[in-house]
Length: 453
Image 1 (cartoon, rainbow, N blue to C red):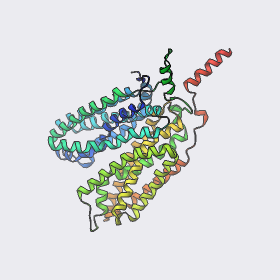
Image 2: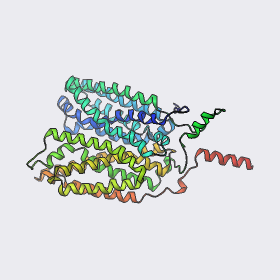
Image 3: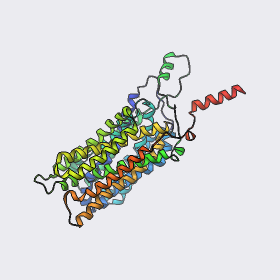
Image 4: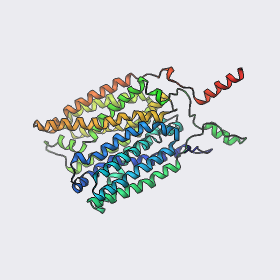
Protein backbone atom coordinates (compact mmCIF):
# COMPACT_ATOMS: atom_id res chain seq x y z
CA UNK A 1 0.00 0.00 0.00
CA UNK A 2 1.57 3.30 -1.13
CA UNK A 3 1.47 6.15 1.37
CA UNK A 4 -1.29 8.61 0.33
CA UNK A 5 0.39 11.88 -0.68
CA UNK A 6 -1.43 15.09 0.16
CA UNK A 7 -2.78 17.01 -2.83
CA UNK A 8 -1.84 20.68 -3.28
CA UNK A 9 -3.35 23.02 -0.66
CA UNK A 10 -4.06 20.10 1.69
CA UNK A 11 -4.32 21.43 5.26
CA UNK A 12 -1.87 19.85 7.66
CA UNK A 13 -4.42 20.41 10.44
CA UNK A 14 -6.45 17.51 9.09
CA UNK A 15 -3.70 15.08 10.09
CA UNK A 16 -3.95 15.42 13.92
CA UNK A 17 -7.67 14.46 13.91
CA UNK A 18 -6.79 11.40 11.82
CA UNK A 19 -4.18 10.41 14.39
CA UNK A 20 -6.53 11.23 17.25
CA UNK A 21 -9.20 8.87 15.91
CA UNK A 22 -6.76 5.99 16.27
CA UNK A 23 -5.30 6.97 19.65
CA UNK A 24 -8.68 7.66 21.26
CA UNK A 25 -9.69 4.15 20.22
CA UNK A 26 -6.63 2.22 21.38
CA UNK A 27 -6.62 4.32 24.57
CA UNK A 28 -9.39 1.97 25.71
CA UNK A 29 -6.58 -0.15 27.14
CA UNK A 30 -6.48 2.09 30.22
CA UNK A 31 -10.14 1.20 30.89
CA UNK A 32 -9.52 -2.56 31.14
CA UNK A 33 -10.09 -2.47 34.92
CA UNK A 34 -13.82 -1.96 34.24
CA UNK A 35 -14.00 -5.54 32.96
CA UNK A 36 -11.95 -7.12 35.75
CA UNK A 37 -14.70 -7.60 38.40
CA UNK A 38 -17.33 -9.06 36.01
CA UNK A 39 -14.74 -11.36 34.43
CA UNK A 40 -13.63 -12.57 37.84
CA UNK A 41 -17.18 -13.34 38.96
CA UNK A 42 -18.51 -14.83 35.70
CA UNK A 43 -15.44 -16.89 34.78
CA UNK A 44 -14.26 -17.59 38.35
CA UNK A 45 -10.90 -15.86 37.90
CA UNK A 46 -8.43 -14.45 40.39
CA UNK A 47 -7.31 -10.83 40.25
CA UNK A 48 -3.98 -11.91 38.83
CA UNK A 49 -5.65 -13.95 36.10
CA UNK A 50 -8.04 -11.17 35.10
CA UNK A 51 -5.04 -8.86 34.63
CA UNK A 52 -3.39 -11.18 32.10
CA UNK A 53 -5.09 -9.78 28.96
CA UNK A 54 -4.02 -6.23 29.86
CA UNK A 55 -0.48 -7.22 30.79
CA UNK A 56 -0.01 -9.18 27.57
CA UNK A 57 -1.47 -6.28 25.58
CA UNK A 58 1.13 -3.87 27.02
CA UNK A 59 3.96 -6.33 26.36
CA UNK A 60 2.76 -6.84 22.79
CA UNK A 61 2.44 -3.07 22.39
CA UNK A 62 6.15 -2.62 22.99
CA UNK A 63 7.20 -5.65 20.95
CA UNK A 64 4.99 -4.93 17.93
CA UNK A 65 6.03 -1.28 17.96
CA UNK A 66 9.68 -2.35 17.99
CA UNK A 67 9.43 -4.98 15.27
CA UNK A 68 6.81 -3.19 13.19
CA UNK A 69 8.36 0.27 13.27
CA UNK A 70 10.37 -0.24 10.08
CA UNK A 71 7.30 -1.56 8.24
CA UNK A 72 5.35 1.50 9.37
CA UNK A 73 8.03 3.76 7.90
CA UNK A 74 8.20 1.75 4.68
CA UNK A 75 4.47 1.37 4.02
CA UNK A 76 3.18 4.63 5.47
CA UNK A 77 0.57 5.69 8.02
CA UNK A 78 -2.51 4.45 6.12
CA UNK A 79 -1.13 0.89 6.01
CA UNK A 80 -0.23 1.07 9.71
CA UNK A 81 -3.61 2.44 10.74
CA UNK A 82 -5.35 -0.27 8.71
CA UNK A 83 -3.31 -3.00 10.43
CA UNK A 84 -4.07 -1.42 13.80
CA UNK A 85 -7.78 -1.26 12.98
CA UNK A 86 -7.95 -4.92 11.93
CA UNK A 87 -5.93 -6.24 14.89
CA UNK A 88 -7.48 -4.05 17.59
CA UNK A 89 -11.08 -4.64 16.48
CA UNK A 90 -10.49 -8.34 15.82
CA UNK A 91 -9.09 -8.64 19.33
CA UNK A 92 -12.44 -7.54 20.74
CA UNK A 93 -14.37 -9.91 18.49
CA UNK A 94 -12.20 -12.86 19.54
CA UNK A 95 -12.62 -11.79 23.16
CA UNK A 96 -16.39 -11.63 22.69
CA UNK A 97 -16.34 -15.22 21.49
CA UNK A 98 -14.20 -16.18 24.48
CA UNK A 99 -16.55 -14.51 26.95
CA UNK A 100 -19.66 -16.07 25.38
CA UNK A 101 -18.15 -19.59 25.42
CA UNK A 102 -16.40 -19.03 28.79
CA UNK A 103 -13.00 -19.72 27.24
CA UNK A 104 -10.71 -17.28 29.03
CA UNK A 105 -7.74 -18.23 26.84
CA UNK A 106 -9.58 -16.72 23.88
CA UNK A 107 -9.88 -13.41 25.75
CA UNK A 108 -6.15 -13.50 26.50
CA UNK A 109 -5.42 -14.33 22.86
CA UNK A 110 -7.85 -11.75 21.47
CA UNK A 111 -7.41 -8.74 23.72
CA UNK A 112 -3.86 -9.47 24.81
CA UNK A 113 -2.05 -10.86 21.78
CA UNK A 114 -4.01 -9.79 18.69
CA UNK A 115 -5.32 -6.57 20.20
CA UNK A 116 -1.89 -5.81 21.66
CA UNK A 117 -0.38 -5.88 18.17
CA UNK A 118 -3.02 -3.35 17.15
CA UNK A 119 -2.05 -1.21 20.14
CA UNK A 120 1.62 -1.12 19.18
CA UNK A 121 1.17 -0.48 15.45
CA UNK A 122 -1.61 2.02 16.10
CA UNK A 123 0.41 3.88 18.72
CA UNK A 124 3.34 4.59 16.39
CA UNK A 125 1.33 4.83 13.15
CA UNK A 126 0.93 8.64 13.04
CA UNK A 127 4.10 9.73 14.84
CA UNK A 128 6.58 10.21 12.00
CA UNK A 129 3.86 11.65 9.74
CA UNK A 130 2.90 14.26 12.32
CA UNK A 131 6.53 15.24 12.84
CA UNK A 132 6.99 15.66 9.08
CA UNK A 133 3.88 17.82 8.82
CA UNK A 134 4.84 19.93 11.86
CA UNK A 135 8.64 20.33 11.82
CA UNK A 136 8.16 23.69 13.54
CA UNK A 137 6.08 22.28 16.42
CA UNK A 138 6.73 18.53 16.70
CA UNK A 139 6.04 18.40 20.44
CA UNK A 140 2.60 19.95 20.05
CA UNK A 141 1.71 17.75 17.06
CA UNK A 142 2.60 14.44 18.67
CA UNK A 143 1.09 15.66 21.95
CA UNK A 144 -2.29 16.11 20.29
CA UNK A 145 -2.35 12.54 19.04
CA UNK A 146 -0.79 10.83 22.04
CA UNK A 147 -3.13 12.83 24.28
CA UNK A 148 -5.84 10.62 22.80
CA UNK A 149 -4.23 7.48 24.19
CA UNK A 150 -4.26 8.98 27.66
CA UNK A 151 -7.80 10.27 27.28
CA UNK A 152 -9.29 7.20 25.61
CA UNK A 153 -10.19 5.75 29.00
CA UNK A 154 -12.26 8.81 29.88
CA UNK A 155 -14.60 7.75 27.08
CA UNK A 156 -14.23 3.98 27.27
CA UNK A 157 -14.56 3.64 31.04
CA UNK A 158 -18.06 5.12 31.55
CA UNK A 159 -19.19 3.73 28.18
CA UNK A 160 -18.10 0.20 29.09
CA UNK A 161 -19.62 0.48 32.56
CA UNK A 162 -22.94 1.58 31.07
CA UNK A 163 -22.92 -1.31 28.58
CA UNK A 164 -22.25 -3.81 31.36
CA UNK A 165 -25.13 -2.27 33.28
CA UNK A 166 -27.44 -2.53 30.25
CA UNK A 167 -26.32 -5.91 28.88
CA UNK A 168 -25.55 -7.46 32.25
CA UNK A 169 -22.27 -8.36 33.94
CA UNK A 170 -22.49 -12.08 33.19
CA UNK A 171 -20.46 -13.70 30.43
CA UNK A 172 -23.11 -12.89 27.79
CA UNK A 173 -23.18 -9.22 28.80
CA UNK A 174 -19.40 -9.04 28.66
CA UNK A 175 -19.43 -10.66 25.21
CA UNK A 176 -21.98 -8.17 23.92
CA UNK A 177 -19.94 -5.27 25.31
CA UNK A 178 -16.79 -6.56 23.62
CA UNK A 179 -18.71 -6.93 20.36
CA UNK A 180 -20.02 -3.35 20.46
CA UNK A 181 -16.58 -1.99 21.29
CA UNK A 182 -14.91 -3.91 18.47
CA UNK A 183 -17.39 -2.77 15.83
CA UNK A 184 -17.56 0.83 17.08
CA UNK A 185 -13.81 1.26 17.18
CA UNK A 186 -13.54 -0.22 13.67
CA UNK A 187 -15.83 2.52 12.36
CA UNK A 188 -14.09 5.28 14.30
CA UNK A 189 -10.58 4.22 13.29
CA UNK A 190 -11.68 4.01 9.65
CA UNK A 191 -12.08 7.80 9.71
CA UNK A 192 -8.38 8.13 10.46
CA UNK A 193 -7.43 5.63 7.75
CA UNK A 194 -9.37 7.60 5.13
CA UNK A 195 -8.20 11.04 6.29
CA UNK A 196 -4.45 10.60 6.82
CA UNK A 197 -1.96 11.90 4.22
CA UNK A 198 1.80 12.29 4.01
CA UNK A 199 3.34 15.60 2.90
CA UNK A 200 4.62 16.17 -0.63
CA UNK A 201 8.38 15.80 -0.91
CA UNK A 202 8.90 17.48 -4.25
CA UNK A 203 7.01 19.93 -6.39
CA UNK A 204 4.47 18.89 -9.02
CA UNK A 205 5.54 18.82 -12.60
CA UNK A 206 4.09 21.34 -15.06
CA UNK A 207 3.73 25.06 -15.25
CA UNK A 208 1.03 25.63 -12.62
CA UNK A 209 2.55 28.36 -10.46
CA UNK A 210 -0.01 27.93 -7.67
CA UNK A 211 0.78 24.22 -7.37
CA UNK A 212 4.48 24.97 -7.36
CA UNK A 213 3.93 27.51 -4.61
CA UNK A 214 1.97 24.99 -2.53
CA UNK A 215 4.74 22.44 -2.93
CA UNK A 216 7.35 24.99 -1.96
CA UNK A 217 5.38 25.68 1.21
CA UNK A 218 5.05 22.00 2.10
CA UNK A 219 7.01 20.78 5.12
CA UNK A 220 10.60 19.82 4.49
CA UNK A 221 10.58 16.11 5.13
CA UNK A 222 14.29 15.38 5.17
CA UNK A 223 16.57 18.16 6.31
CA UNK A 224 19.32 18.41 8.87
CA UNK A 225 20.63 15.38 10.78
CA UNK A 226 19.19 12.04 9.59
CA UNK A 227 19.95 8.68 11.20
CA UNK A 228 18.53 5.29 10.22
CA UNK A 229 16.80 3.09 12.79
CA UNK A 230 19.53 0.44 12.63
CA UNK A 231 22.21 3.05 13.27
CA UNK A 232 20.20 4.78 16.01
CA UNK A 233 20.06 1.69 18.23
CA UNK A 234 23.86 1.59 18.15
CA UNK A 235 24.20 5.08 19.60
CA UNK A 236 24.49 5.91 23.31
CA UNK A 237 21.83 8.60 22.80
CA UNK A 238 19.19 5.97 22.03
CA UNK A 239 19.96 3.95 25.14
CA UNK A 240 20.11 7.05 27.34
CA UNK A 241 16.61 7.94 26.13
CA UNK A 242 15.54 4.32 26.65
CA UNK A 243 16.55 4.60 30.31
CA UNK A 244 14.89 8.03 30.60
CA UNK A 245 11.56 6.73 29.25
CA UNK A 246 11.69 3.53 31.29
CA UNK A 247 12.34 5.37 34.56
CA UNK A 248 9.70 8.04 33.92
CA UNK A 249 7.05 5.48 32.97
CA UNK A 250 7.89 3.22 35.91
CA UNK A 251 7.42 6.12 38.33
CA UNK A 252 4.08 7.15 36.83
CA UNK A 253 2.51 3.75 36.27
CA UNK A 254 3.37 2.76 39.83
CA UNK A 255 0.74 5.22 41.06
CA UNK A 256 -1.66 4.81 38.14
CA UNK A 257 -2.07 1.05 38.50
CA UNK A 258 -2.85 1.19 42.24
CA UNK A 259 -4.37 4.65 42.56
CA UNK A 260 -7.71 3.83 44.21
CA UNK A 261 -6.44 1.48 46.95
CA UNK A 262 -3.40 3.71 47.50
CA UNK A 263 -5.35 6.84 48.41
CA UNK A 264 -7.72 4.72 50.51
CA UNK A 265 -4.82 3.19 52.45
CA UNK A 266 -3.09 6.54 52.94
CA UNK A 267 -6.04 8.07 54.78
CA UNK A 268 -7.64 4.95 56.29
CA UNK A 269 -6.51 5.87 59.81
CA UNK A 270 -7.51 9.54 59.65
CA UNK A 271 -10.72 11.22 60.75
CA UNK A 272 -11.77 11.64 57.10
CA UNK A 273 -11.19 8.32 55.31
CA UNK A 274 -11.58 8.17 51.54
CA UNK A 275 -14.79 6.58 50.27
CA UNK A 276 -15.02 4.23 47.31
CA UNK A 277 -16.67 6.90 45.16
CA UNK A 278 -14.03 9.46 46.14
CA UNK A 279 -11.27 7.00 45.23
CA UNK A 280 -12.91 6.50 41.83
CA UNK A 281 -13.02 10.27 41.40
CA UNK A 282 -9.30 10.39 42.20
CA UNK A 283 -8.63 7.86 39.44
CA UNK A 284 -10.60 10.03 37.00
CA UNK A 285 -8.54 13.06 38.02
CA UNK A 286 -5.34 11.13 37.37
CA UNK A 287 -6.59 10.19 33.91
CA UNK A 288 -7.34 13.84 33.18
CA UNK A 289 -3.85 14.85 34.37
CA UNK A 290 -2.33 12.10 32.23
CA UNK A 291 -4.19 13.43 29.19
CA UNK A 292 -3.53 17.12 29.87
CA UNK A 293 0.17 16.49 30.44
CA UNK A 294 0.51 14.92 27.02
CA UNK A 295 -0.50 18.06 25.18
CA UNK A 296 0.53 20.68 27.76
CA UNK A 297 4.05 19.54 28.59
CA UNK A 298 4.90 18.37 25.06
CA UNK A 299 3.88 21.78 23.70
CA UNK A 300 6.01 23.42 26.39
CA UNK A 301 8.97 21.36 25.17
CA UNK A 302 8.75 23.21 21.83
CA UNK A 303 9.52 26.40 23.77
CA UNK A 304 12.11 25.31 26.35
CA UNK A 305 13.67 22.26 24.66
CA UNK A 306 13.40 18.49 25.19
CA UNK A 307 16.29 18.08 27.60
CA UNK A 308 14.94 20.85 29.82
CA UNK A 309 11.42 19.45 29.91
CA UNK A 310 12.76 16.02 30.90
CA UNK A 311 14.73 17.71 33.65
CA UNK A 312 11.35 18.89 34.91
CA UNK A 313 9.70 15.47 34.53
CA UNK A 314 12.46 13.63 36.36
CA UNK A 315 13.73 16.24 38.83
CA UNK A 316 10.41 17.71 39.91
CA UNK A 317 8.87 14.24 39.79
CA UNK A 318 11.39 13.06 42.39
CA UNK A 319 10.49 16.04 44.58
CA UNK A 320 6.78 15.19 44.29
CA UNK A 321 7.44 11.62 45.41
CA UNK A 322 9.51 12.90 48.34
CA UNK A 323 6.67 15.20 49.43
CA UNK A 324 4.16 12.35 49.33
CA UNK A 325 6.48 10.09 51.32
CA UNK A 326 7.14 12.74 53.96
CA UNK A 327 3.84 14.59 54.27
CA UNK A 328 1.30 12.84 52.03
CA UNK A 329 -0.72 11.18 54.79
CA UNK A 330 -1.16 14.48 56.67
CA UNK A 331 -2.75 16.44 53.82
CA UNK A 332 -5.16 15.17 51.19
CA UNK A 333 -4.72 18.25 48.96
CA UNK A 334 -0.93 17.77 48.99
CA UNK A 335 -1.22 14.06 48.20
CA UNK A 336 -3.66 14.67 45.34
CA UNK A 337 -1.67 17.60 43.93
CA UNK A 338 1.61 15.68 43.93
CA UNK A 339 -0.02 12.62 42.35
CA UNK A 340 -1.60 14.77 39.62
CA UNK A 341 1.75 16.37 38.83
CA UNK A 342 3.47 12.97 38.64
CA UNK A 343 0.78 11.63 36.28
CA UNK A 344 0.99 14.74 34.11
CA UNK A 345 4.74 14.08 33.81
CA UNK A 346 3.97 10.43 32.99
CA UNK A 347 1.77 11.48 30.08
CA UNK A 348 4.07 14.29 29.03
CA UNK A 349 7.03 11.92 28.84
CA UNK A 350 5.21 9.73 26.33
CA UNK A 351 4.19 12.68 24.17
CA UNK A 352 7.56 14.44 24.21
CA UNK A 353 9.82 11.51 23.40
CA UNK A 354 8.97 11.39 19.64
CA UNK A 355 10.02 15.04 19.30
CA UNK A 356 13.18 14.31 21.32
CA UNK A 357 13.96 11.48 18.89
CA UNK A 358 13.34 13.81 15.95
CA UNK A 359 15.78 16.36 17.39
CA UNK A 360 18.48 13.72 17.78
CA UNK A 361 17.92 11.41 14.80
CA UNK A 362 15.88 13.42 12.30
CA UNK A 363 12.65 12.40 10.59
CA UNK A 364 14.03 9.76 8.22
CA UNK A 365 12.99 6.70 10.27
CA UNK A 366 11.76 8.32 13.45
CA UNK A 367 8.71 6.04 13.59
CA UNK A 368 10.88 2.94 13.52
CA UNK A 369 13.22 4.40 16.15
CA UNK A 370 10.22 5.33 18.31
CA UNK A 371 8.92 1.78 18.01
CA UNK A 372 12.18 0.32 19.26
CA UNK A 373 12.25 2.79 22.14
CA UNK A 374 8.79 1.68 23.30
CA UNK A 375 10.27 -1.60 24.52
CA UNK A 376 11.11 0.54 27.56
CA UNK A 377 7.35 0.81 28.14
CA UNK A 378 6.99 -2.99 28.09
CA UNK A 379 9.52 -3.30 30.91
CA UNK A 380 8.18 -0.33 32.87
CA UNK A 381 4.61 -1.65 32.60
CA UNK A 382 5.72 -4.73 34.53
CA UNK A 383 8.32 -3.08 36.77
CA UNK A 384 6.24 -0.20 38.21
CA UNK A 385 3.22 -2.22 39.42
CA UNK A 386 5.52 -5.03 40.60
CA UNK A 387 7.52 -2.68 42.85
CA UNK A 388 4.46 -1.05 44.40
CA UNK A 389 2.35 -4.20 44.85
CA UNK A 390 5.14 -6.53 46.00
CA UNK A 391 6.38 -4.13 48.67
CA UNK A 392 2.85 -3.25 49.84
CA UNK A 393 1.97 -6.94 50.19
CA UNK A 394 5.10 -7.60 52.24
CA UNK A 395 4.47 -4.57 54.45
CA UNK A 396 0.95 -5.83 55.13
CA UNK A 397 2.35 -9.22 56.10
CA UNK A 398 4.65 -7.39 58.52
CA UNK A 399 1.62 -5.78 60.19
CA UNK A 400 2.05 -2.29 58.76
CA UNK A 401 -0.73 -0.17 57.31
CA UNK A 402 -1.52 3.26 55.92
CA UNK A 403 1.20 5.30 54.23
CA UNK A 404 3.90 2.96 55.53
CA UNK A 405 2.76 0.41 52.94
CA UNK A 406 4.12 2.62 50.16
CA UNK A 407 6.97 4.74 51.52
CA UNK A 408 9.65 2.21 50.57
CA UNK A 409 8.22 2.08 47.04
CA UNK A 410 8.34 5.86 46.82
CA UNK A 411 11.98 5.93 47.87
CA UNK A 412 12.74 3.41 45.11
CA UNK A 413 10.82 5.57 42.61
CA UNK A 414 12.89 8.60 43.64
CA UNK A 415 16.05 6.59 43.00
CA UNK A 416 14.79 5.52 39.56
CA UNK A 417 13.93 9.11 38.63
CA UNK A 418 17.42 10.20 39.65
CA UNK A 419 18.86 7.51 37.36
CA UNK A 420 16.67 8.84 34.56
CA UNK A 421 17.78 12.41 35.30
CA UNK A 422 21.44 11.41 34.99
CA UNK A 423 20.74 9.55 31.73
CA UNK A 424 19.05 12.65 30.33
CA UNK A 425 22.08 14.76 31.22
CA UNK A 426 24.29 12.34 29.26
CA UNK A 427 22.37 12.93 26.00
CA UNK A 428 24.53 14.70 23.43
CA UNK A 429 24.17 15.32 19.66
CA UNK A 430 24.62 12.17 17.60
CA UNK A 431 28.11 11.66 16.18
CA UNK A 432 28.36 12.52 12.48
CA UNK A 433 29.52 9.01 11.60
CA UNK A 434 25.94 7.82 12.18
CA UNK A 435 24.41 10.41 9.83
CA UNK A 436 23.10 9.56 6.39
CA UNK A 437 22.61 12.07 3.55
CA UNK A 438 19.05 13.08 2.81
CA UNK A 439 17.83 11.70 -0.55
CA UNK A 440 17.87 15.15 -2.14
CA UNK A 441 21.41 15.79 -0.95
CA UNK A 442 22.52 12.40 -2.23
CA UNK A 443 20.93 13.14 -5.63
CA UNK A 444 22.76 16.49 -5.77
CA UNK A 445 26.07 14.77 -5.04
CA UNK A 446 25.46 12.21 -7.77
CA UNK A 447 24.51 14.88 -10.27
CA UNK A 448 27.60 16.97 -9.47
CA UNK A 449 29.80 13.91 -9.88
CA UNK A 450 28.25 13.05 -13.25
CA UNK A 451 28.61 16.66 -14.47
CA UNK A 452 32.27 16.84 -13.45
CA UNK A 453 32.92 13.55 -15.24
